[in-house]
Length: 156
Image 1 (cartoon, rainbow, N blue to C red):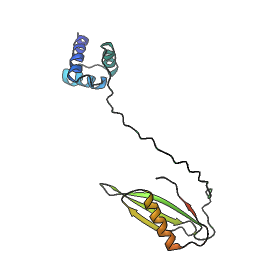
Image 2 (cartoon, helix red, strand yellow):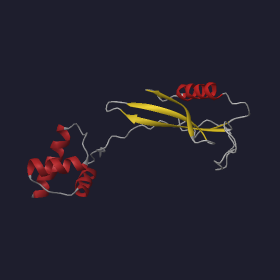
Image 3 (cartoon, rainbow, N blue to C red):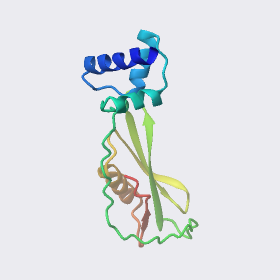
Image 4 (cartoon, one colour):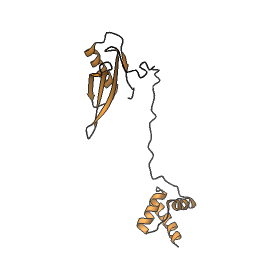
């Protein structure tokens, strides 16, 4: 008799919710509102027997495909971070600073010879102009005379 009640309640619940409810929510409704305890598997089987659609309880999110640019950048450093002269190799990185409601982004450029920060810039947007502006600031402050390797992780 208990299962017959749950079958009639199934159809009533599905009709009231316009068939937009899944087995886990039906199980919860039967348990809390009517005192009928069944498993999610039993609810799923009853929905299959009654030809009711099984709606998922978790809404799926669309994940945008990430476009990867096809740059063939050879690794000139090969993990050799010991540089014999200043202004031969610069490395950059971006970190974020939590401002409670938003983030600020800090881009720094370091000379690998002296391990000294030669330029930095703070911005509320993380984009290519942040890195370009920081590089221009470092270039005009240091004025490298020889060839220069600029190393970045190309994260964003």
